[in-house]
Every structure is written in structure tokens, then in C-alpha cells.
Amino acid sequence: MAVRVHHVLSAADAVRTYVKPGTVIGMGGQNINRCPMALVHEVARQGIGDLTVVGCNLSLPLDILVACGLVARTEQGSGNLERYGTLFAWRRAVERGEIEPRDHSHLAMATRFAAAANGVPFMPTRSLLGSDLLTGLTEAEVARVSEDPWSGDPVVLMRALSPDVSLIHAHRADLAGNVVIEGVTSHEVDMVRASKTTIVSVEEIVPTLSERPEEVTISGAYVSAVVESPRGAYPTAVYRRYDFAEDEIKNYQRLARAGGADFAAWIAENVLRQPERSAT
Amino acid sequence: MIPLPREILAVEGARQIGDGDVVIVGTGLPLLAATLAQRTHAPGAKLVIESGIVFPKVLPTPISVVDPKLMNGASRHGSLFEALGGLVQRGLVHTGFLGGAQIDRYANINSTWVAGKRLPGSGGANDIASHCRTVVVLTDHEKRRFPEACEHVTSPGFLTGPGARAAAGLPPLSVKVITDLCVMEASDSALVVTALMPGASLEDVRANTGFEIEIEAVPTLPVVEPPTVEELTLLREVLDPDRVYFPERIDQ
Image 1 (spheres, each protein chain N blue to C red):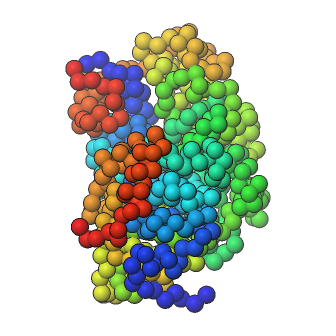
Image 2 (cartoon, rainbow over the protein chains, first blue to last red; image 1 turned 45 degrees about the vertical axis):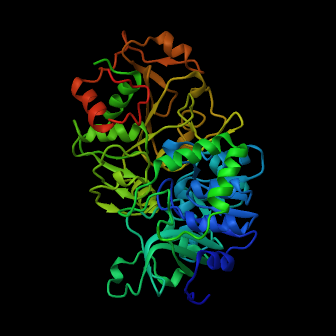
């Protein structure tokens, strides 16, 4: 595959171009940090379904897609919002058998992304040994116990995972698609490098980062589209830009926990009906 | 000042961290315990956070492993692969703190499924239990949390019993479980009660444990030292003034 051509697009155009029914989405963000909310709201508005969502910690963006009935499968290390509780829409759907979750450890997921990011079919880890996670992943044919060819010790081979499209939110990008993330990057860099395409929403687009290439976290070589989306991670945090909005997250959790008409009305009003986010 | 049971638990958790130790903690009581240790007897303790934060100086009171308050003054902001792979799996993190819905007789932990209820899942817990040499579990002591055997093993303790961990290819491990009733320890064995919390009895432990407890063969079980006024004041006034972790605490 040739180096990707990047485009500065609106969220609507980027999602329309790269997210299709049945797509495997690599989900950026972790818990209350830098979740790609604006992009996920756009996926929800376009009603693109039968999605497989993969990531390490899946949080608010997954739960919203599940609440909209758009998710068929997840491959994840965890699904929760830490102090703010579990993902209620996801949990309900999993317990009802509507979503098939494939459980990994966080390192096992990161290892699968690292394999794909480096163009190799699998990568070993020494996590999972002896656990029921290994049993499930072996049955799913994405993990296999083998032995270190030198020492003979057991290792677990994790199959490379290459999402169709990754969605992440970052601090800034330039017109060549180079991306800067400040603070922790969780699983995102390898996931993006592993993905067939990637949409990056950013707080701001700058003309060029080529005078300070050492600041670039992800090369434009891996980026398909850049979307300017100030506060595009709200209500989750962007390090040094804005903190997470605790009241908003608590409110979502209260509604999601209860489910039913109030939750559906909140989704309709705040996700589905919401116009393209402005700079306010 | 009268400490609450969970405050004693957090302080006893802090005492497991030595000056200069490298420890990985998630959020919740373990993070509070590690921050307390850093500000009391272990100023040189180094924290690793799974999201990629290496050796931060924690500002009160973070609620998540990606909370910006947790990113303060770090050695580096890296990735999950660096933290769990490059430090934990690499063998540079000696002690890991874990929670979990269930922990069984052989110290296996379940954080995925309990009685048809879907829980958050492993996160970094399986990685920590697979690679750290010491695991500390802080948990409330309830019967449903201590079954004979976990219905789903998310994170390995000693699996089916002595020798099983080595047979699976896992390195040796010591586990210490600290609850609001007691301390239990295990090393390639079943959990053994080694100390009681102030005011708790073995009868309390028995009544709230789902498996037959083993008790260390000593004439009298030691009782955990209650928190000092300094520890309790730090916990209440500096580290968690908004009672994020102790909603049960009522200002006196």
C-alpha cells in the first residue's frame, strides 16, 4: 500500500468516506481522556451500523455507538469509565447477547496493534498464560500458545490486528497530516500505524510542523483525513487544553444506567440531532 | 480521630510500598495508598500508570489512569505498550496493586464475569498479575468476593494450586490481600490469614469468606497497626478532601 494521501475534511465528509457498515473501528482515547467524541457523534448521526469496535480501554464513545444500536462486536481490554462506573449500554447489550465481546488484557491488545503496526503477522507476549482470557482468545483464533524457539519457555503469540479505520482526537495537525499528541498516548500510536485508514480530529490545524518534526507524535504517512474540531473530545479531557467535564459524564452515566426513554431522548438531543460542532 | 475500615485498608496498603520501590497502580484505593506512601515513609517510591505515565508526582485527587492530575511531574508521558510492556513485562516493576470483583482461595482474580453480570474486564490487571513479583489486592471483605474458585480467571494467582503457575509458564509471585477485616498472604499456595484488622475477629473473617480459611500457625495473630494521626490527616485533608474515595466519610 502506498503512503496515504491526507485530506482536510469536515467530520461528515471524513466519516462518509472512511466508515462503512461492517467497518472495524480502532477507537482512540482512554476512559476520560481524549476520546474522539465529535467523530463518534458523526458516525452515530450517519447511522453506520454492524460495527466492530476495537481498542484497549473502550469508554464513552463505544457506549454511545452501542446505545445507538450500531455495534455488533467489540475486541477490548476493558469497557468502563473507572470512578464513574461501567459502560451501561455496552454491558446491557453484552448481557443480552446482542454484542459479542472479545476479552484481552491491555498489553495483549497493544501487542496485536504493535504486530500490525510493524507489518508482522503476530507478536509474542508472556501475559495471558494460565488465564481464561487465553482460553477465549485461543478459541477465537487470535492467540496461540507456542514456545520460545531458543529457551523452550511458553509464550503467547498474538495475531496482528489491523482496524479498517482508526478514530482519534489529538492536539494539532498540519496540512501534511502530521499529528501532535501531548500527554499519554495509551494504545493510539501503534493502533493508527496498524490501521488501513485513520481519521484524526484535532483542536487546531496549523500550516506546518516541519520546523519542529521532533514534536510530531504520528507521521502524516499514517493519516487519511484531518478534521478540525475544537473541543472535539468533550466531555473527556485534552491534556493542557481542557479538563474532563465531570458533571456531564456523571449525567450520562445516570441516564445510561437507567436506560429507557430518558436515555433515548438524551441521545436524540445530544448526539443525533447535534449539528457539526462549532468553535464555541 | 477514629479511622474508617477502608481508611485502615488504604493506609495498610501504603505500608506495602518501600522507599525506592517501583509500583504500578490503577485508580481507586491503590492510587491513594501509593500517593500516601510517597508523602510519608516512601518519598522515593516510583509509580507507573498503565496509560503510559512514568514516575509521576501525583496531585490530589485523580479519578482515572488518564487524569491530567496524574500526569504531573512525570519522567515521561509514554504509551500503554511502554508501561505494560516496556516496564511491567520487561520486569522493571516489582509490585502491582489490583482490585477485582472476586478473588479465590488460590488468589486468582475475576474482573470479567460474575453470575451472568458483565464487568469491565482485565485492563492491565492480567498483565500485572502475570509479570510483577508481588501483587497487593485491596478489597472489601464480603463473602461473594471470596469464592472457593473464580468462575472466570481474568488474572492469574496460583491457578489450581501449588506448581500450577510455574507449569503455565508464569514467574513466581507473592500475593497479599488486605481487606477491612484481615490480611491474607500466599506464595504458590492457598491464601492464609496472617493478621487481623483492628476490631475484627477470625469469626468475622470466616463468616465473610466463601472458602475454608487457613490461619497462620502462630500463638496469636498480629493486629494491623491503626493509621497514625499524621496518616489520617494527610488522607482526609490533603489527598482526598472531597471524599472522592471515601463517600462514607462524614465530616466530624
